[in-house]
Amino acid sequence: MKRFGMFVMSTAMIGILAGCGQDKEVPTEAVLPEPIEVELTVPEQGNVNESVFITTHVTQGEENVDDASEVEYEIWEEGKKEDSIHVESTHEKEGIYSVENIFETDGIYHVQVHVTARGMHVMPKKQIQIGDASPQSDGQESEQEDQHHEHGNGVEGLSIHFMQPKSAKAATDTELMTHVQIDGEALKAQVRYEIISADKETTWVDTDEAKPGEYTANYQFPKAASYQVIIHIENEEIHEHEEHTVEVK
Image 1 (cartoon, rainbow, N blue to C red):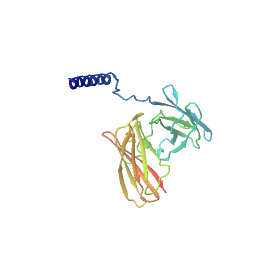
Image 2 (image 1 turned 45 degrees about the horizontal axis):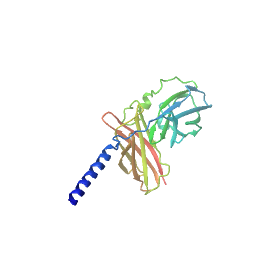
Image 3 (image 1 turned 180 degrees about the vertical axis):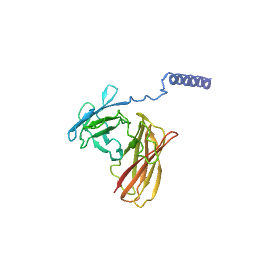
Image 4 (image 1 turned 120 degrees about the horizontal axis):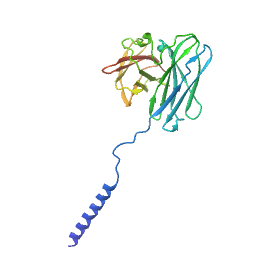
């Protein structure tokens, strides 16, 4: 009888514990963070050899983002993206990141801000008319720029941002990271790095999509030198590439 009583009590306890387990709410879906919003402000016109003030306001929901890990401006003249310059921003206050730039010649220029914050990457673009230049509709690249890729077709709305390694050292893992978006949305594609040494030896490196639109790979450059890094982006509709130089110490 005692054994039977112990069995009944054990069964009852198991039932109570099981009931408690059922009452506890178990989350079935992860809560996604709110996306960051990036408002790029660029004057429509400017004058040659005069400072132009450009700002970016970064927010997440109702909160100003003051802890962005990167806010960098890329600026190039129409049809000359391969000669673009990169300018680090100054963090002002309340999510505002600014830069002053002087344009030395007349022309239509494109200003693209690359913002990395809280695990997300956004890169909107606008244009500015400097001096006496014929204005173009915003976001429209010239035919020359659309075809600056050797075997690409100049996909409209495609944005590629290579995170230049800050300190690449020979025989040490170097992270190569590229953000790819189309019309402001992460692009799903096969992304590979073609790495060419000074003596023309070529190595192909596959990437992993760590986050939507963020493609990374680790690579050990064999020796100190300048390397050509070509980013190849392919899916059923796109076949593009962009070239960069990485200095390895």
